[in-house]
Image (tube, rainbow, N blue to C red; front, side, top):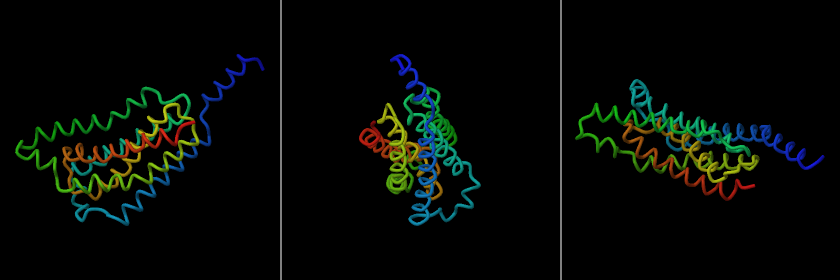
Length: 212
């Protein structure tokens, strides 16, 4: 085979999804959900008034935002694990959860007297939030980084950061069932900080362990 033919063959092969990578990511996702759920069940569990809380919009909204982040991050991670990388649309989709949260903050500020803003932002669980979400997200992050080793990410640092976002989204979704602070102001501040910790850790881990 001549040089041009070899280059075309390699390019075509790189453009095809690797079954092993898809299987590795799917296995990592299932194990990540299980691992985070075990930590949640053993360590904290749901809030005592979860039945009553489930009837409120603020409580349910937390799950919408965190689950949306986890889903869009996982899709972006799947694309970033391959040589061709993620399309712009998948990366732009990562902004869906933050934009939705910003809209909720605007609604909260309009509906709540300004004297209550500070109390809602600080809440009563800021330390638990910034501690428990990273703790529940460590195992999922490790599993996603391990799965990346089956792929060929051309931007390992970015792929690792997105793995951190996915792990953070999963952990935050579970933690939301425990947290008694439902204000979008609290979620935007402390959930975001906790997820950022996992994102930075993922970027560092991706740079070291996901190179090829």
